[in-house]
Length: 288
Ligand SMILES: NC(=O)c1ccc[n+]([C@@H]2O[C@H](COP(=O)([O-])OP(=O)(O)OC[C@H]3O[C@@H](n4cnc5c(N)ncnc54)[C@H](O)[C@@H]3O)[C@@H](O)[C@H]2O)c1
Ligand SMILES: O=C(O)C(=O)CC1(C(=O)O)C=CC(O)C=C1
Image 1: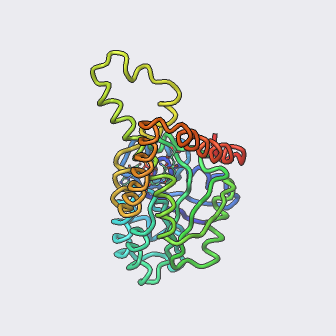
Image 2 (image 1 turned 120 degrees about the vertical axis):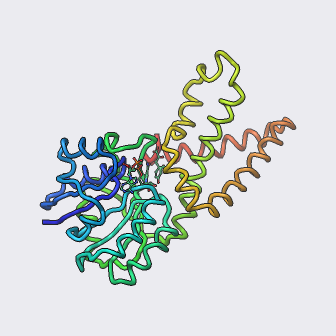
């Protein structure tokens, strides 16, 4: 029997629990979350078997998954250094940034506890355990960052999540944070900025945002995401995100100039390049 402790039963933590429920291995899932409503819902749905607190339940666990906001994960890695854990336990996380998390895991690793960074590249603008789904991660990339885990621990972890048919990719924390700043973090900044700017400009327009159609709605869906989670992400990947934003500002300046000066060719090339890349991703089935 494998005992899994998931701390943070939100969208990601509860979805991982739902995937593990499909595993052929006998498992007990202990859930830790301060939200009583979510925890009770997941108990009733038999997504988790019992509730516990991180500090009290950690000593029984073979696998500990930290699935709260990045700022919470960083604190919990410190808390776990004060607990006597099973010698073979694997501690991992699902945080959207990895450098700060890997740094915070060092004390635990120095005490001989196996830690491996993780980040499933799937999610939603919805949050909370009720929004979790068994198929949320299907076919997605799952980044792993090497810490002090053994090959057997990785194999067992991947086996527990087999039902999701994930694509496992090992990266360094720095390469990870650089990459996701571009494909995930900056897009969230841009989406939120589109909404905030439009809302401000149209504040006194009686039709205004109510007339927004597919274009505005599909480019800004992710602006509906949880501000606590996204604040923690921005705070923990500040350098990479701000550097990427500089590049975006430069690119926006260039297209602004092209539009202002009626440079038809430059405008066409701008949209043509984007269309070609987007269509290539769609044809691979990666995007809709
Ligand atoms: N949402 C996404 O698309 C996505 C995708 C991949 C990774 N992530 C990462 O996964 C993590 C969780 O994100 P989410 O979308 O599930 O967020 P969420 O808001 O749905 O869930 C977070 C959960 O953590 C709980 N929590 C808060 N403080 C806690 C504490 N001290 N102890 C235990 N639980 C606590 C909250 O009550 C909540 O249930 C974040 O680190 C995020 O960066 C999110
Ligand atoms: O699909 C979404 O709504 C998401 O925002 C998922 C998303 C992203 O693509 O940026 C969000 C955060 C992550 O860490 C990984 C995935």
